[in-house]
Image 1 (tube, helix red, strand yellow):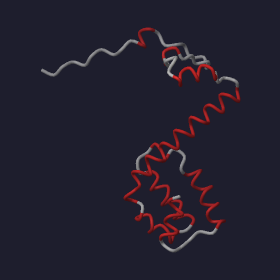
Image 2: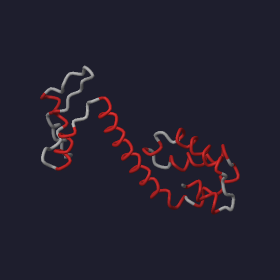
Image 3: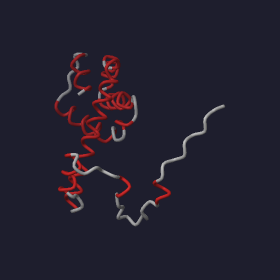
Image 4: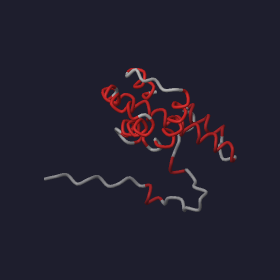
Length: 139
């Protein structure tokens, strides 16, 4: 979206082919960018530089609102990960829909201590689940 805004604002619109090529590049290049502050701008600049260098100067137009855009990217990333987790869990038969409905409705609290890892890892012992000791006070 930022690319389309920059292209339109600078009077250098992208053709449909350029948009598709840039979209594929950005999907691959932006993996992990949602979790790093400012990575979206760097990814945008890199994508524009590789596909349409004349648009790189327009990145300055969105610097002021990138913080808000970063929050939206993080929210979109979280939602996508949540949906993908449910889809894959359902696909492989490990998703318990009735338990999910109970937890989401607030009728059954989610407790990480009871989560079972089928990957062979031993469950956490009582000592591992105990709260950490209070920090020492400074004199």
